[in-house]
Image 1 (cartoon, rainbow, N blue to C red):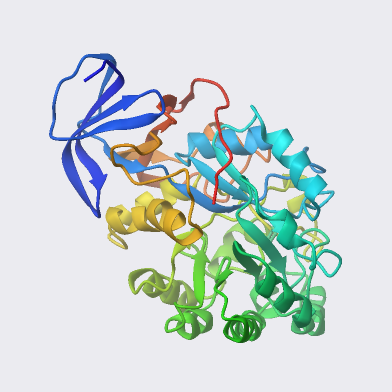
Image 2: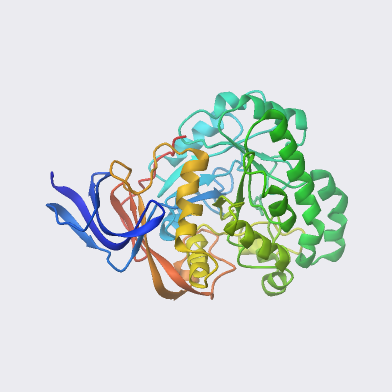
Length: 438
Ligand code: DOR
């Protein structure tokens, strides 16, 4: 075999649903050997015997705020945070300023991303009542996973509540149609609850599980009517998990590490508005149901909903405080800790963050660890015990509700397209992210 650029040895390489011992040979940006431990002529060798190697994880929902609110985050800071957290690709959301709702806006974002993204990327196009006829012409390019529709108001101006317009999008587009699913009418009716209480503890009372379920049911009806698969982002409630359990032919489901780690009212007592997000973190029964949804296959993927706001903004009095919290860098550590606590296996986690994003969104330039695949991998130390510290965070927001939390299991390194892009916290190389193709 021709000289390799990198030869990796490990006792735990993820292959076809399990971990095997062996070697991975890399030449340039491709895996050219996967098999029993073997020595080849190589420029570099990495002995990762004590580490687990998994196909590069993807965070299916982040908000990187560029253009328009770079003081909170930009494409460089957000993607560098992702990389240090062991994430190798992100789907970024369209609620920027201007929003990503036109071909020009998408082109601008893709240009902004060139040579500035530390991980691979794709930018959703926002569906609105102005562009619902045109989105079919915008989505079909590399670097766009599909259309994102807010059917309930959240951060930014995007909103599309007209079912005929949603139906049109479902009938005419080809890629993923992803929904922020909260019922706008019920949100408006109940807003007074939040205003009167002035306490974030009422956030899941205002935006209750009926807000989420009512909306999700309407969307599933539209999916049935148009015979089109839909994707529901950040599913938060027991009611939705139960309802969606037997609708997997129509719906793919995302949930967030926050919903799998925190619950109400405790989280609001401890962290106040810092953990205010839409949809909200709910009571323990929802947390339990989401874990059941992970185990029984209702949940397909994990998105951090990385939604940075400054601490000054977040400490405004509720409900003027903006919703959202940073999370792209803590997604893997939190989930690895859950692996160590016995809530899911590492194999299951790999399914959620690496395998299913490729399968469900049909990413064309990513594959599992096989010969011929793109050499994008994450190295995990399952035993490392470490505290999440502010100084480790790279998001411009500079905070996380999880600082101080002691985690077992840590992302140690990232190989991105054959280059060691991060190792032991050090971000090496240069911004080498590529657009994800579908
Ligand atoms: O809490 C949230 N924050 N939920 C969203 O849907 C949007 C996000 C943001 O952009 O701040």
